[in-house]
Image (tube, rainbow, N blue to C red; front, top):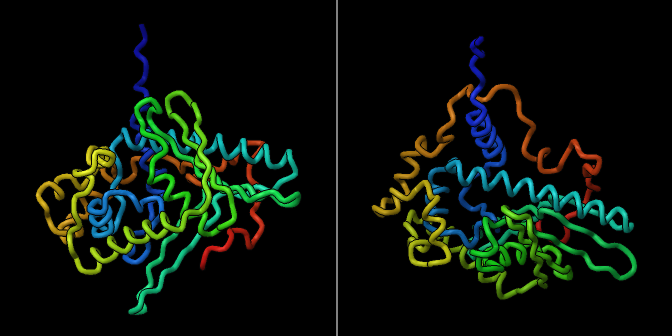
Length: 291
C-alpha cells in the first residue's frame, strides 16, 4: 500500500487562526480608556491587563468560545438586517459609542464601546432598538440575565436614551435564544462608572485591587481562565505584570506559524461573503454619545 504524504496539522491551523483573529480584535490598553463590556469583570484582572499593556491570548477553550460567539453574532446580525430591510427600516451594525467623563482635576476618563447591532426604526412612531448579543455555554447552567450583560447594554442606551434595549442571549451548544428588554437605567449607569473609576484609581496609583473574582461565586469562572492567576495568588504588584509582559503576549503562537492572510475578523463578523452583507453605514449614525 502506497504511503500517503504527511497531511498538514489541521488542528494546529485552526488554533493558529483562532489566535490570529483574537489578535485582530485585541484592544489597546491605555490608562484612561476603558470598555463597558468589561466594567463588571474582576477589577484585579483588568488592572493586571492594563499594567501588561496587552490582552493575554486566551487558552484554546476560551478561543473556541469566542469563535462560537462570532458565529452566533453573525447569524443574529444577518437576521436583523433581513428583517429591517424587508420591513422598510434602517439597520446599522457596529456603531461606535464614546463617553467622556471629566473630573474636577481636569483628568479625562473615556469609556468606549461598539454597539453590536442597532435597528433604527424611522417613521410611524417606531422606537430605536439597540440589540446586544451575548452567548453562554449552556442556558441550563447559567443564571440569566447576567448583570454584566445588562450593564453593558445600559451603557449603550446612554447614547440612545429613548431607545428600547434588547439583550439576546444565545446558547452556544443548542442555538436557543432568550430575549430580555430594558430601558435606560441611570442608577445602573452610575454604578458602572463607579467601578470604572475604581479601576482608574488603582492604575493611576499603582494600587493592586481586591481579587473580587475569588470572593464572588458569580465571578469565579474568570479565575479558571485568567492568565494572571499566578500573579494574583501571590498578590504580586501591578508592575510585575508589566515586567513579565512577554509571558502574556501571543501565548502559544510563534512567528510565521500562520500561512497566508486570513480574512480580518471584522469582515468575518459582518459576513462579507453573504448576499445579505451590510452596506456602508451612513455617516453621522451613532446617537447621542459624546465624542
